[in-house]
Length: 347
Image (cartoon, rainbow, N blue to C red; front, side, top):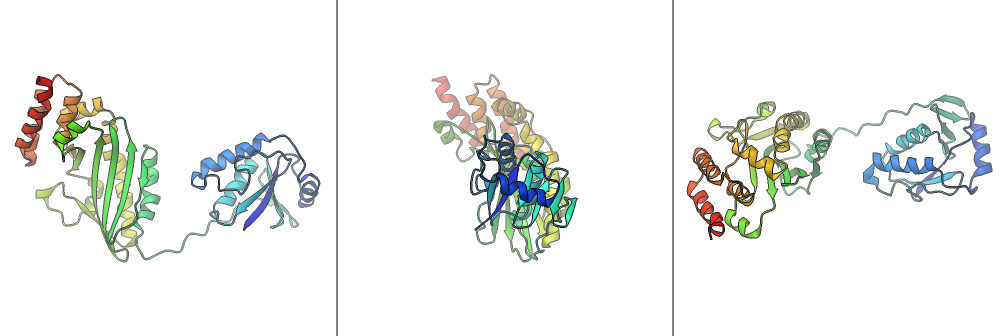
């Protein structure tokens, strides 16, 4: 089923009777394509890209060869669509004729009807009924995603599995895909505990990946996140990087997500911004260790330096060995990888 409205450019009616008369006279009259129709279509698709070409049942590009553009709108469109369409149309100097509602909207903006002419003021949107359940993915999309989209991140939200919900922020860079993963475990009726993982997945040649396996990803560890410390759950200073955050109730989830957005934008994203290219990452890694976010001393760090043919490979190896010892990681594993990486070069 659909709802039909009609648009035209000139003349602009001053009364509902004039709008009715013009529509009756000019509907279906041939005319060259109107660039204002095309621009309206472009603006709607830019404002609501999730609708794609489904925002109208005909001519979604606005290429109409008639004086009046008769739009068939699907009944499944969101409630915010119609006011947005009217606003964009009148801003372009178009008139919007809604015969079924007995109204015509014209630049000003004005609403014309049998009752006369009045200022166009859209009624406030009806907010959704509050839910007692914790909608992790929905609230994450509302409170966190908009703050990260400007930095090039997109959301991946796979379907929940049992008591697990995943929200992932993903960004492509020349070095590889950057991923901020929040693993939520809990019950929508009560609370969730969140654990955050941040990594970069560089593209490695197969022989090099075999040498590094399983440490083929760049991992960032966090030892302090001041904005989130209020939400720490089961935290022990002896395991400073094992940081889980508790969200209790709907209001508690919103508070945690707001704080998470603050921390991501202020602290984590600037670190990732410095690691978009191989050259930048190698410079960043050489200056480790840092506080409160640092790069783990993984085998992939050495492999990337080796692949870039850096002149200070030995120095980097020594520094990574020191970091591994400080982190309680196996230094012998790094030594074996170093020898295997250099073997083709020495041959």
